[in-house]
Image (cartoon, rainbow, N blue to C red; front, side, top):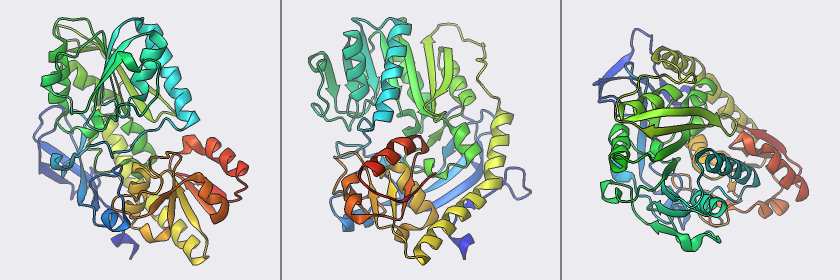
Amino acid sequence: MLQDLIPSVNKLKANNQRKIAHSCPNCGHEELSIFYEVRDVPVHSCLMMSSKSEAIDFPSGDVVLGFCDRCGFITNTEFDAKWSAYAPNYEDQQSYSPTFNKFSLKLANHLIDKYDLHNKDIIEIGCSKGDFLLLLCELGNNRGVGIDPSVVPGRVSSEAADRVTFIQDYYSEKHAEHVGDFICCRHTLEHIQPTSEFIKTVRKSIGDRNTVVVFEIPDNTRVLKEQAFEDIYYEHCSYFSPGTLARLFRDSGFEVTDLYCEYGDQYLLIEAKPISIPSEEIHPFEENVDDVAADVELFTEKITGKLEYWKQYLDDAQANQEKVIVWGSGSKCVAFLTTLKTIDKIEYAVDINPHRHGKFIPGVGKEIMSPEFLKTYQPDKVIIMNAIYTEEISEMLAEMGVKAEVVAL
């Protein structure tokens, strides 16, 4: 039965609404409302596995999203930090995409111009393989320190390499000496459950300095409004809307100077500065808790229909003996296939990141192939995990002589 294959959904306003005793990591409220559950999913989606058996046997956990009706924050109540095993084989580098690089260059120039980042000391928390930090240091002749357990020093070639130090570790109070003139943190906070504790640690490290901070995370408002279930997976234990993010920073001793979305409204960015007197100023881009509750309600009303659509799409393709591949082998791919319980409906995933080629997807077991593989495989359907890359991928397919139906989530 199809209903047995899709996550359970509890409407917030339903009489049988399930509330649990669970502390909100953002505000400390002791009760959350459960509205979405996906069981038995990989606890990591970007750790590269060397064999199919190793990938299939990868540990699994549950995603049970709880909504805080005090501050609007959403968290995975079943998240266990013991699985946060980020290491050099955690492969999330996006800089092989021209589309993504164009965005990174635009963002780097924006920050350099706005905050006069020239000959400054820059810290990046969760720097991944170091692409963005090196770019900031190249463009502004800056010095940098990148902190990330998955960093691979030397992976990215750069003229600024001798001005950048990488620390292969998780950020904590022991790194408080690394403050500098500017702190950035991109796509890391959503992987951290004690969010209030983490932001307060950053604030404490700054002290009385006038260090600007910029954080970038997925925008959960889009996830809820579009029922983007492919963006809900185990590593993402924390889900922010503009208001919940801004309230967290204000409560942690910052003034929010800007708040906006970028990259097709997928990414939420906050710019903030430390203050000694709490700020009550609300940014125009913020929503309130009732707005988030309405978005959660919309999600619960429509998510089953969206899951049914994609399940039927893959079933029909299999019945017609069509070859289907997924383009993009990262977290969205893992969430797409494991949420729908349709791992058997595709044979391969394709990715432009060469460090993924020949590896196997954790919890899924599919081998990751290079785009050139499609020249001989000639799929009938290509499902793009992120619509923002549709034009880029379509051009690559045309150049390779691959004539397939291209659809995007």
